[in-house]
Image (cartoon, rainbow over all chains, first blue to last red; front, side, top):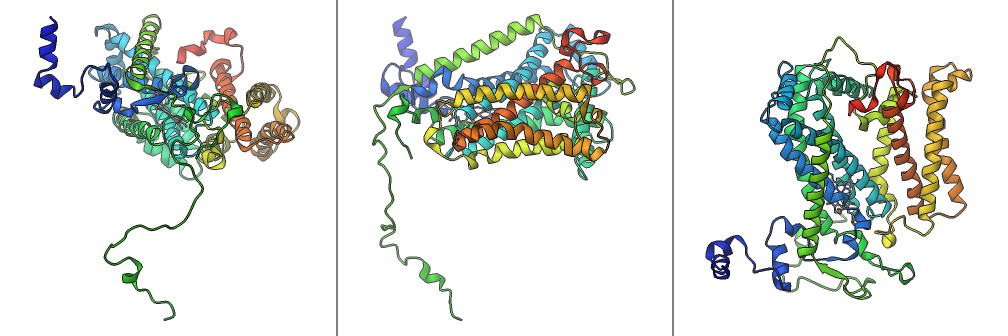
Amino acid sequence: MANLIDSITSSRVWKSFFRHGWPDDELNRSLVMTTNIFFHLHPVKVSRRSIRATYTWGLGVLAAILFVVLAVTGTLIMFYYVPSTELAYHNIIDLQTKVPYGQLMRNMHRWAAHGMVLIVVLHMARVFYTGAYKPPREFNWIVGVVLLLLTLGASFTGYLLPWDQLSYWAITVGTNIAGYTPLIGPKIRLMLLGGFEVGQNALTRFYALHIMVIPLLMTLLISLHLWRVRKDGGLAAQNIPERPDSRLEFQ
Amino acid sequence: MAVENKPDERFVRGPVKTYGLMELVRGRSPMVEKGPDDTVFSFPIVAILEALLALGTILVLGFFSLVRNAPLEELANPDLTTNPAKAPWYFMALQELLLHMHPVLAGIIVPGVVVLFLIILPYIDTDRSDAGRWFATPRGPKWVYFTALYTVIAQAGLIYFDEVMGLRGLGAASPLLLQFVGPIMFGVILFALPLLVVWRFKPTRRELMLVIFTIIIVSAITLTIAGFLFRGPGMHLYPPWGMPDGYNPWSSL
Ligand code: HEM
């Protein structure tokens, strides 16, 4: 058995996939991080303070995890959903009653969406109250503000898709708010809805925004956001010494 | 022809030496005064933490989805308005504001100012010496706590006042006063009061931001809860447990 594992892990095929040895020494633990596209978001070593649960509460990572969950469950729902005012509502009913685990998929997508709005707001509050928006992280804070707006946009555009009374009137009320802007308000509303009322054109546009435009933008911006976290020298926590009286100044 | 541009002479011709001493600045070499190296390997610790978070999220979400179904009402009907007709919960703060002031103020100016504040915040408060510390200073938590408490009470009071009496009840009639001047005045007072109080303690910029941000976010939360949980048919205030017509605010999630 040990021989078999040995010959697999020392084969050229294996080595072309995993470009490091068993991660039980410092060299290989470093290589795991630098040779893996997901792990390379992290530095090889992180400061102990920055991974404390009570510093970040894991909120940024949670937001990213929820984004992935939404992408996966959303894709599954897309297999059964047609964005037509004739079909959409019945597709949702079929999804819930005829498709195996369809109801579960829809539930998870819905609750993850609400959860993500909540978590992103909490993450912003965490970043604010830890003062992590200060230089050199100003730009990443602004990327965050845009991400918050995109998260709201994703949630709002998705809300219309089931085409029930709830979605219809919520989107009517919501887009009316946009219509109040002086001069350009009605034009913005017209552009969003593709008409003066919520109808097929609105459904088509919200669908395109919901499954394509906003997720793409968010993927881009989340990548930028995480990359900036590293470029700004990791989380702000590590610059703070344990005891305030031993306060040091850092550039 | 006093000043003549001679582009050729602006650069060193033939890079014999491409660097020079330009200036001396105060600074530190990278490791000076950084204290002992307090780091851990990302692998496996961070990797495991993140995997656990992902698993936990999926478990909690999956379990919740087994016990609570996403709502689905009747087929959309443009001829049958629901009562109340509410925006999704994360826009309820805006919809709640709309009940109290002119749409331009509630829908555009107030949210615009909030977003603008968020964007310029890191350029107002740039002192990085306390970045990464929760609530900035030892007195920070207390300030945040009292500001939050004050904001909840003030906002809830204002919402209730506007519902039962409002400026109209006090005899005001002009739309300008009711929809613009009045709300702006209340808004200014809402921010000015706590700022005047903390001013006496010589706040740092970060502490000022702490107070302002807390007023904003707690206001948003209070307005959201008021709009989402306490508004019933006709967008009137009711206790969430005593809604008329069997309306259940939670059913719109
Ligand atoms: C889709 C939404 C978002 C995702 C997926 C996301 C993800 C993350 C992650 C994974 C981190 C690493 C630290 C942590 O886990 O807390 C982080 C840090 C950070 N985020 Fe976000 N974020 C989002 C939205 C926001 C928003 C709305 C803001 C602020 C307006 C923001 C500002 C920041 C800043 C400044 C940092 C650096 C924090 C520090 O150095 O302590 N992010 N983000």
